[in-house]
Image (cartoon, rainbow, N blue to C red; front, side, top):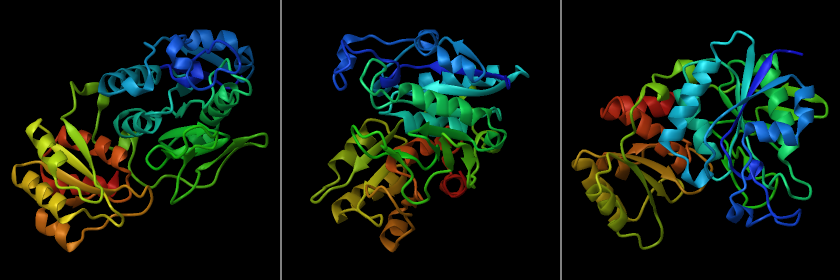
Length: 330
């Protein structure tokens, strides 16, 4: 066997049990969630791949995931990296916020241990669950020698995606996780694990962030633009104490005039504002109106990813130029 792989079960669909095989949508109402040891008991074939070590972690619905869980995951993974026999880490996670957790760890881990975050669209008790197949693919991925240096990866449906770029695109379909602009990093299927490209932006040990060493993150909110948006949400976020706001604007990265005025007011009040887009694909550049209002472009990050990076950036600086540099490099 080629080294050990740590299995961290945070909860989510992949670890959930319904009342029967047909209970595939509202299963969370039962509150039956297996921890990592329980998942190994349910899927003993995982141990045929390598020595899989169950790591205790408090189970939580992915809709409840946030900084406290990210910090604990970072502390746990950094600790596991001290074991010279540890080849990688697989995190079992609910799909609702999986991409945000993966990106937070991609920015905030201080070790180079290969990490794959995986989940499932159907609970472990369901007919044709994707739980076991996704865990197998994730374990095989972190064991592959080319996984080191890839940053945090998201592995589902036999596809390996970069944490920075992947997003959930469908409510129920198995192929829900996609990278719209750039595609997969590689595949983990019956032919084995094969990588085809590498992430270019800074990650893990190359970023200035350390989740495990933080006590908290500043408040950052997302304002979703729509026809007729008048800036009420933006002003409410400022009143609530937001230090940063991400504008999920129209493509290619703009808002209504009223919303832009409110964003300019926020900037004048000392709030850092990043312009993203609700389109789900494409790069936002600095347009004339944005520059005049002091709004910074969020590059090609989705609003939820831009929020993660902005919160981490604001934990160390409020300098717009430095924050812009983070968005250009991370």
